[in-house]
Every structure is written in structure tokens, then in C-alpha cells.
Image (cartoon, rainbow, N blue to C red; front, side, top):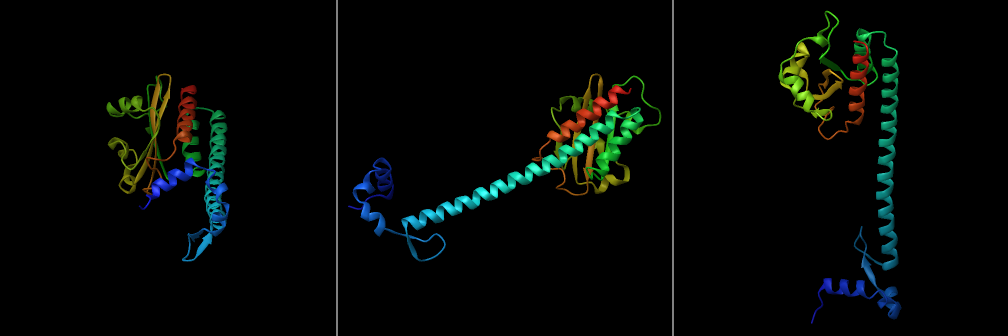
Length: 217
């Protein structure tokens, strides 16, 4: 009667002393080479398995190091951005810093925003132009920035003639006391802002912009 392979595996798992009683069997056993047609001993197969696992771990470690370095670089940019906002003289200067730093330091090609809930807005600034009633409601419901290829329809009009070529967006809510707003980052690259990307730094940017703006109004 032929034994089922699962029965053999279960037996060996439950009887770890089997190969102590039949030690010579280990030396005689030959297994298929994982990368070729020849056979090798169990010890050689174990070494190959460990090498494969080591390569996988090295790859994962290199990936983690790369992510860490990228996060450090972004963190440094956010720090410089925060320092610049702290030094802003007035709300117009805050807004100019937003466009300058996000455009140059973060290489965001298209930036627009709207702000509401303020008592006295600087005259002539589009950032304080009236928005559709649904926009503040949507922003109020946002717990975090949203990224993807489908923006709120009205926000496309904020980019004027560039709107037709934009393919991905980051919608960053601005909330600080009575102040509300929406900062929109956009790109012609459909993969620049994608739904699965991390939004921690985007949220921090939104918090900084909202606080700096509210403090100077």
C-alpha cells in the first residue's frame, strides 16, 4: 500500500527522532537541485535554501533602506517648508511660500488652493475666491489627503488652461479653527499621485499651511 505524501510529512513532523534512529539515511538521500536537473544531498539543498532566503532578506533590507532614505529627504523638505512659513511676514507671503516651496523643493508642477471661513481676506487673491457650496462640505468630511486621477470637478477650473492636461491629483484639506480650505497638487503624470501612496507628509503640509494662514489673518 503506497503512503500518501501528506502522511509521510505528518509522520516526520511528529517524530523528529526518526533520523536519529536512521542517521545513515540522511547521507544517502538525494534531492532534485532547485535550479537544475541533477540531484544533491540534503545538506547541499539546505545550504541553497538558506542562500535563497538570504537573497530575499537582503532585497527587503535594501528596499527598507531606500524607503528610509526617501522619507528622510522628504522630512528635510517639510522641515525647510515649516521654517519658511514661520518666518512669513503676512498671509500673502505665506501663500507665496506655498507655491514656491511646493513647486521648487517638491517639484510639483501645478498647485492651486482655495480658503474660506475667514473674516477679512486680502483683496485680489484668487485663493479666497468663492467656491461651490459642496466643496467645504467635502473637505470637512475628509479625514486625510486623497490622491488619484479623479479630482473634485470644480477644482479643475482652478487650473485654467492647464486643466486639460492634468492626470493625477493630491487633494489636501486645510483645517484650522474656523478656517477651511483645499490645497490641490496636480501633475501631467498619471502616476505622480496615486491612491495607494502614503499621505503622512501631505497631511503635515496641509496642517502647516492651514495654521500659518490662520495665524496671519
